[in-house]
Length: 321
Ligand code: UDP
Image 1: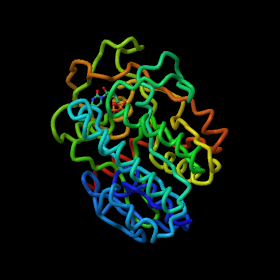
Image 2 (image 1 turned 180 degrees about the vertical axis):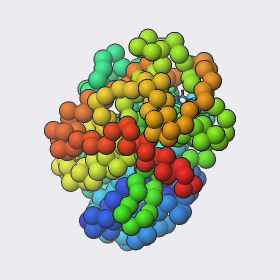
Image 3 (image 1 turned 45 degrees about the vertical axis):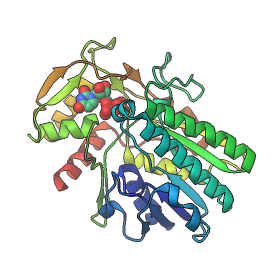
């Protein structure tokens, strides 16, 4: 299949691009390199550096059969400071992409949505029919796109799948010696920050909130390996039918507290993780755990890599960068 990957120079997009190529697909990557890295785009992909809003004049020339759409701003804190950036870049940018797809007869899209669309869910694990009450402009922008996809799918006979990720970690290390992982200039995620603290780089880890209503007082999250996540995208490419929009959660179905993750990082690296306890981070819900029953039913997808594998693979990647 000939696939357009927007944001293919980013963390998850680069892993999906490498996996698509490994399975014999042709891949065109569009990325404005605002947060991605040119050298993260796997060899064999055709690369174009521009924003998704610039696709319309060229999309018709590329014979694209499906789009996997990652290109987005993705920092929750930044979105609260600068919501206009998130509404313009994520929402307006995606509507432009959908209009280009419609104009050029591209009728299949897999979208990188987020558990942030649910906000503080009342019931765990979170099913896809849970209420959507995002607590940040980032989550709101992802939800707005999910709603646009529903309408475009129905009216314009597009097959659309929104994959709502929980907490993604790990890296891809190929048998050919290539590695793809998380290289954010502003790193907000727990596992890479804990690994850096364990390596003695950048000072101790700030542990945000120890008074949550959870067993050990720290937030509980559902971690999923980026290679399992990529596998779900490849499956989603052939799921769904024209006119249908599916929303599918991607998580392991199991929660780990921040302290449990820090213990796993200590075990995986053999180093202590220096920690300073800090106040809660605004907008962090106490618990987020995915129901992955729909992913199993619709995509026949089952996560196969555990937290220790995520930490090992991320640790190997950290040592390369
Ligand atoms: N966290 C932390 N210190 C950090 C980064 C994250 O204590 O440097 C906590 C954060 O408050 C949350 C959990 O780790 O409870 C997971 O945060 P992350 O940013 O990795 O993912 P999120 O759940 O926000 O998408």
